[in-house]
Image (cartoon, rainbow, N blue to C red; front, side, top):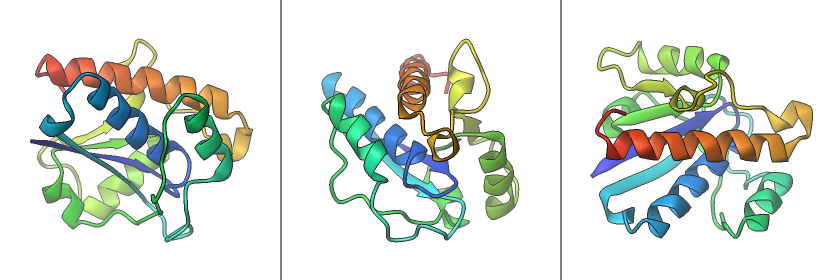
Length: 153
């Protein structure tokens, strides 16, 4: 089983969106038993809080639920517990490297690196544009799934 952890700053918008989009894609492809997917934060600011309501509404508009998800902070142990740790932006990546003590096994990736337009996933906390974030997350997850199935993630 391949274990994937999506990571953003607070674990209430982008990383839970990626978690549940990927779970939905895997379920629709009949692959949910081959993968374990979760998400976490690099900060402690939102610990225990549910998915931010506009992010929850955006997922729901696409037929995806996220009930029961609450924010948790990434730990150094996550590096050994997961096969792939996927950050949403360059600041997340810096914090992930700090938390993990580096990346000796080359497990840390940016989500949009799996697309034709590498870079940062739009942060709706600042932009308020959850549709742009949805497009980034959906495209990134689609690319990541293709890479995983091709054996190149």
